[in-house]
Image 1 (tube, rainbow, N blue to C red):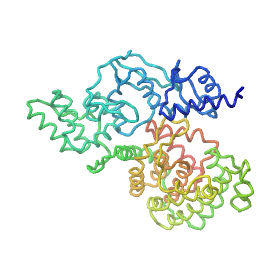
Image 2 (cartoon, rainbow, N blue to C red; image 1 turned 90 degrees about the vertical axis):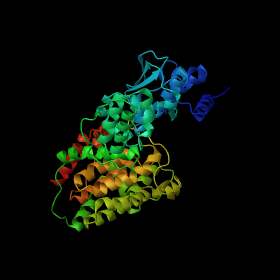
Image 3 (spheres, rainbow, N blue to C red; image 1 turned 135 degrees about the vertical axis):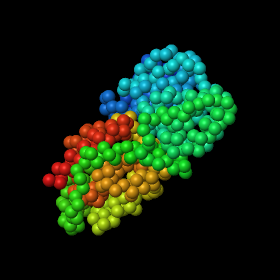
Image 4 (cartoon, helix red, strand yellow; image 1 turned 135 degrees about the horizontal axis):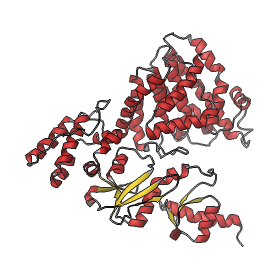
Length: 508
């Protein structure tokens, strides 16, 4: 007779086969009741609604949302395919959000389908799907990304509501910036006789400085005999100048968010010191605070470290070869990596305190910080040295967050643009707050983004004469909540106030 462990292994093999086939939403038809109940009981699956499940982790605490948010888009696509076949697609607004690079989990996902019931289907963690009974767009006006059926960019722009531009201005401007020629829209505008929509699109393109496209839309519609009035659907002009050569919606979204957030940061952050600090005194203070900084920064990331362990690792009294089976092993490797990275960051601090531009220093040196952070893990054989070469090459997810870090393909465009913003930003407070925020928003690495973000924050602080600042472990929940607010709702005020309060205490 098979043991309980053997039975569980058999059920896990069934689950793995489904996952290997790319299935996220698991229906009762996909496996027997015995396997299903065994996997749910052991925590490897969770029920979303009657008859539908998704893979989870048994070590995830009750009520935690990480696995669900990571599975959201895959689950919805599988579930909707099972219900409606190919007879569904996202409505124009969520289609545009995805085109703009915004894959954050919505509270309610609105879809179109001729088979819709015009009522919401409740999902986990206060999310839902609303299936509207509406005719589908023409097949040429639909596409599939990540198994999600959505409207093409031109079709969604023509079909979206007028309020979308003002209610989702960043997403709207980001997708408009992706259009390089009026011909992408004119065929559908002329074919449907959409003179009012043409006037609104012309006004929208002129709002972001794409006057040639706006003029082409107006001239083509008038030449076809249509009368139209140009109408700007945005409430205000954009804070940035759009570059015709920059077609990445991710980069344009970040540039717009940076411009919108910087004034809020300046209103909440203490003014930078105009007094030049003594370099030796500053670095001595940084050395003195190392134990405290390492303990709190590593603990925020879930490592179980003590100041004694950190001190032993720093002084070389901890030998990884003789402690390779210790429960402290992984924690000690992280502590050693933090120590080595801290030394690299100190060299960057010296450059900044000596008058070098903080943005330039961070752009040049951050890769070295990262290599040092994980060098002990490479030496121990836990990760490959190639994993430290460049930015991530796979998706990442943030625990308990509705924020989806940008697709890894977009990181290559985002990071040079991010450092350009740091380099040209004149205000130290803005470099500090937005530097930290956008670094972890992009999440350029598979691991270590929080520690790297705090190193970056402190290098930017030094550039403004602010003291090295520790984010205490006891503030972790508030810290993460303010980052979530900024990531999902683009409200930077709580995060800027949070950092400002910590920096202010250090200035006393």
